Image 1 (cartoon, rainbow, N blue to C red):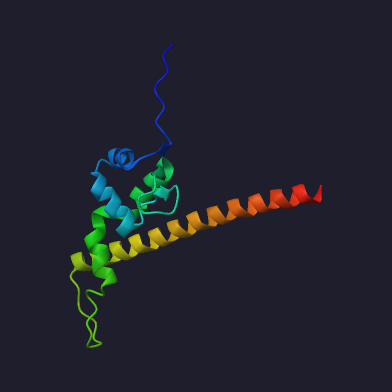
Image 2: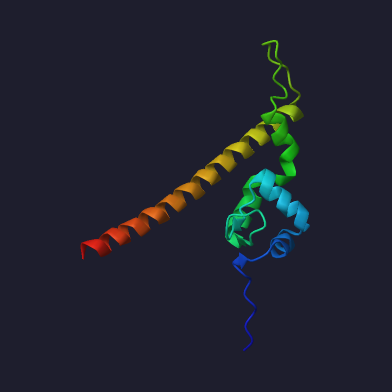
Amino acid sequence: MGQAAEKPTMLNSWKGIATFLDRGVRTVQRWERDLQLPVHRIGKGPRSPVYALVPELKFWVATSGVNSHRALQAVESGNGIPTNGRPKILSPIETSRRLMAESLKLVRSVAETSVRQQRQAEILQKRIIEMRSKIR
């Protein structure tokens, strides 16, 4: 019986990451720079090799709001909040866009916190193992 080829769980180049996301290499590099696309570097230089984990990319795509980036920029710039102190009356569409952008910001924040906590848990697990090996 022939087995179906397994999809990679790690992509080892900008080209591989771009192909996975169905975008160009420069677009993906811009997303890493501007939108925190989860790309890891091997080394410290800007030209050091990169890799990305498919589950992290899928999570980023689901939570980044790439298609709603303009709405997110509007919220971050304070659009719809006048400087004279009186609330601006927004149309239902503007209100919907504002709420969607705010919700995307919250989802992104939760996702970042989740990833950060997962990494901290992994570090703690390693430290526990090290401490146990020293005790024995």
